[in-house]
Each structure stands twice: as C-alpha cells, then as structure tokens.
Length: 140
Image: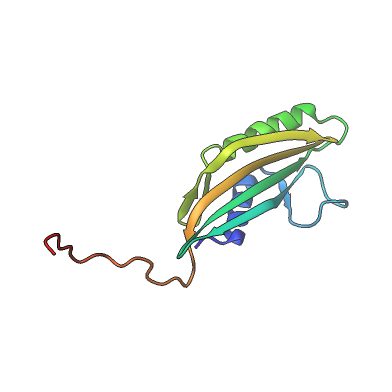
C-alpha cells in the first residue's frame, strides 16, 4: 500500500533535483528565497471491499529569488516542474500517473502549480484478496 508520506517524499525527491530548498514548515514568513513548499490540498478515498481509490491534489508553491522581479524566473521554474512530473511519479515500487492537467498560476509573485494523482491500492491487512479458481464444471 502506498502511504501519503511516501508520496510526499517522492515529490520532494523530484523537486530537489532543481537545486532549490524545500520548506517543510508553514511558509507565511521567515524563509529563504528561492524556495519551494509542497502541500496536499484535497484528498479523497473511496473504499471498496478489499481495495480503495485514492485521489490527491498536490500544490507546489515556488517563491522566486526576488519578490518584485520574478517573471522570467517563474516561467522557467514552471517549465522545469512541468517536465519533472509530465510522465507521473515513481513512489517506491509503483508508478502513479498524473490524472488530468497540470495547472499554474502566479499570485503576488508566487508560482502555484497543481496536479492530481489518482490510483487504486489494496487495503493493508486485507490478506489474500482473491482466491484463484481451481476448476469450473460446465456440465453440472
């Protein structure tokens, strides 16, 4: 089963390749620039008998070096982040595709990008989920 912490770790590992500090604390004040902050915005789980569907919205905030002159830097970072996640995300021994579009917006000089992950998983502790059929008699 893929855990939320594993997804966050995989996202941060990808972003670290950009050479920018990743903040893990609240980013309201007191952080270095440039830096990145990652947040799970919404999370849904739909349960089935022995499995579930997980849907997550991932938000990535990029705070550029200069809060007043940022346009080119933000566009460059947007393209780099899009390239990092365009084919999906490798989490442990699983590969999770991006569900839908990657969106980007700049608000007060901060790049905000979002994308959704959607995947099925087996409940931990479900044990043997399926029993293989040994034989089928059509003649009754």
